[in-house]
Image (tube, rainbow, N blue to C red; front, side, top):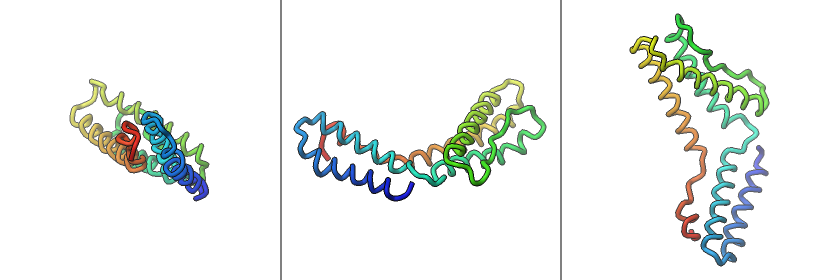
Length: 156
């Protein structure tokens, strides 16, 4: 999204911190307000009209697909993740990402088949672990800093 959404969220967070929380007498209620700040900060980090957030997820899925392709050439494996066409809307990119997630889940289930040779299974599982690690790091990078202390004791 453009910076106006980010400014709006920043304004809400500032209002909560400067105007609302100091007026709240209950420790529990202040903790709830800090929980709201955490949620708003999470939304701020992920809300974007550009495909940056989903784009990284799609890039990781495509990299997995390209790495798996030579390993699965002569096998009856499930469909590999696909690359998203350029110029797609945010909703279309989400649909491609979600379909690729479905395909990756099918690959994970398929890799557990006792019919596969152990060396190939190990190589596939290594690539899947690398993909999951990349996705997890992206999720952590685009998540707001936890505010557990603030939420539990109602103060900063």
